[in-house]
Amino acid sequence: MRRILVAVDSTEVAREAARVGLDLAGRVGARVTLVHVLPPSVAAGETTDFAAFEHACEDYAGGLLAEMRQLTGRSGPPTETSVLHGDPAQAISQAAGAEDVDLVIVGTRARGTLARTLLGSVADTLLSHCPKPLMVVPEVPLKARTPQESAEEELEEALAPSTLGAQG
Image (cartoon, rainbow, N blue to C red):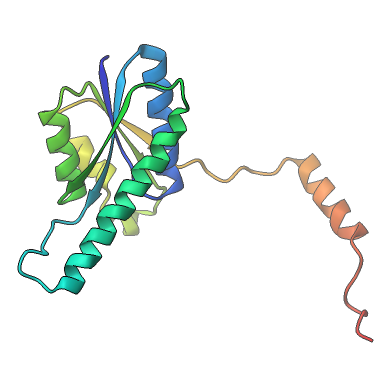
């Protein structure tokens, strides 16, 4: 494996996907390309305010990618970044097909069936359209508390000073 493309947004699951991709790349000696997708650019001929907004979006995307790149540390794998434009699944698929990519990694949030139907899912679309192998990193569910953790929390609450009758 020589190259891994990791698609990220500002969610925690995207950060986890980036960590997985960077870790895997470090283990196998692959290069990583971190990508973020913005909507298609429509500023041509528009007002300067709209052009300024698009520029701010580009800056935000660049900052997000720089933040994700920091997950590599100094001894991490070689990492590039790229801001893409268009439909996220389509732009990621095109980038994977155009580049010398061996694996695409994305995160996915746990959503119900109705939300997936109404909102769609980039990961679901990529599963059927991406020309390269795809790894989907699931959202880590909230950790269930152990009985000991529950007992410790109850003890802390019982020992905390009461504020019910503290009005004076």
